[in-house]
Amino acid sequence: MYLTKNFALKEMTKSSTAERLGLTNTPTMEHVINLVNLCNHILQPLREEFGPIRINSGYRGPDLNKAVGGSGTSQHCNGEAADFESSKVSNPDIAHWIEANLDFDQLILEFYDGKDPHSGWVHCSYRKDGSNRNKAMTALRVNGKTQYKDGLLS
Picture 1 (cartoon, rainbow, N blue to C red):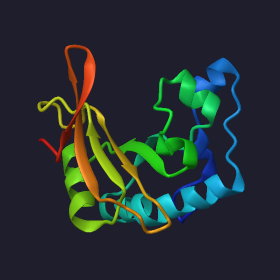
Picture 2: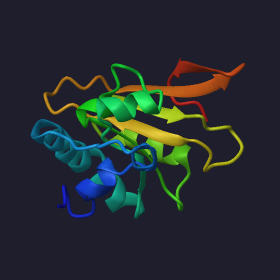
Picture 3: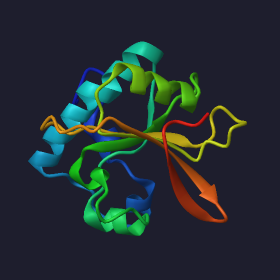
Picture 4: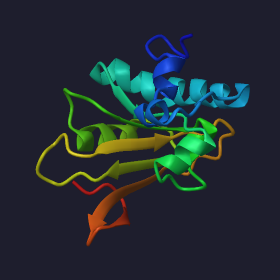
């Protein structure tokens, strides 16, 4: 089942952690609707601008989210968020393009090291109800802990 021209439900729910632990990661219809909106408003425009986008994490059911150490309020659990990257375009370039061109809820350049343009990944969420905050942040590891800074650092 395709959610948009280039994004399938299977790639938005696939998880090697779920497979390894024998967890089901099946979204409800509401989650699928949220994934369709995420793909239409964030991922498909990215694909059209930059070419293939690799999804690292999309929908996460509660058991999977717990297994990967996700936040209890993670938008991944609602089908509203994805982590992704490109082999052709740097993560900072992707994040800056989203910030300048798309409506989003949260945009996080996660664990970019400032040296390798493909280090880390991009997290982006979208709310279909129109309450998107357009909040851009950078996640950094400092002394083994995650710190969030406002804005996209690059």
